[in-house]
Image 1: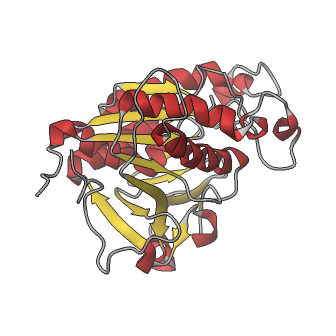
Image 2 (image 1 turned 180 degrees about the vertical axis):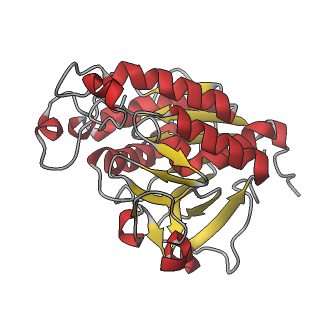
Length: 292
């Protein structure tokens, strides 16, 4: 019988579109596994140059003014990863190789250098090289709709899934041996976590609804619920605070530039790719059943 991978040999890689996505979606997960001694690798596809800036004192960074938000967000991401205990980070292709695409229908979405316009195989080849270098057993990214349809999130899904295939293909030759990712998960939020009762007690002036939360699925689709405990929860909140241009955190709640308060979830949920059946009862470990 093949033994499961011990904590020190576990390798987790996460693919995200912009700085702050990692902390909002997977901050507690990253903190838990990093604290357990696993190798945690983050790949960020853009600098998030098109993000809306919350603090008035930093409004000059916005893309319609100085267009200096991207470099600033590199520093925010670096601070967030320190809070999570994550040291292995890559910008896909290098910092600024792909620009934030903005929302569908905006001029930013048509720029030739934006991530949405990148050929999938080109970007996937860059990610496949990182996969072969980091050699994760588990990869986390978005579902096919990117959670809420943002072009960069959709593209991150496409690139991640294609890269997993390329990394395992001997015909893809980058000088490293092929590597097969044993398990892929997509971020999700169970419907039970976004009921009206779940939004009670919001300290912000306005309250989000289930429609404002990305990646909501029926509870039966959840395959794994990761609870890192109090330490991981605190690390996630601190990491989200580090992304000060994008997130405001208050008393277990947070809001983005839309100022809609929503709970800061410290139990993070994952589903399997389409066509794979979830277990009848969600597990609590992304590495369950994964061997070294």
